[in-house]
Image (cartoon, rainbow, N blue to C red; front, side):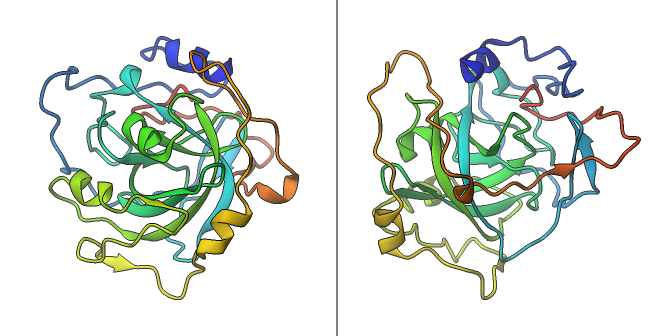
Length: 250
């Protein structure tokens, strides 16, 4: 229900709890969306909703947790590094990883694995560790459910210019890790942990029957499956931030 309300919310207003708002829309749906054109950015620590997030270039980043998706309400708005969000692209938002960069996202509920482009900040809602575009959620098989338990692994920096959607679409795999599009990666992660095919099979969670008309949030997994990028904000912080991005209401 929370996810449904987030997608239906007025994305132009400031969220009073998180203190963030969506950026202005610069491209209407149906118009061509420019690709690339942003800036490489890691960024300084920032606070949203009473939590401090510390961006870093961490080649060993790997986390399991809840992913969601965002679409029409945020289509055509500037992302946190200056690109334009396209719901039909293969992209994602993450609180701390470099922008733009590539991550491997593996759906632990159905074994699908895909390389996606991280070009935005968030999510800031509850315990989610990643927001992917609508199209990426469709490829990963959780568009109708709304959320999924995933494994996220940092791959490396992504190129600044042009569209990589076609290349990223070819990385989709079933029951094996998505291959890295090395021809497009400018800075490959060195000696980081990797997903084994067996791990995708062994950690898959059985999907429960749901009403496909309403995105559902799965049952909370054991705490050992969650990895949070956010830490409590230091004392004295008011939890507000003028942090504009395509999907700030999350």
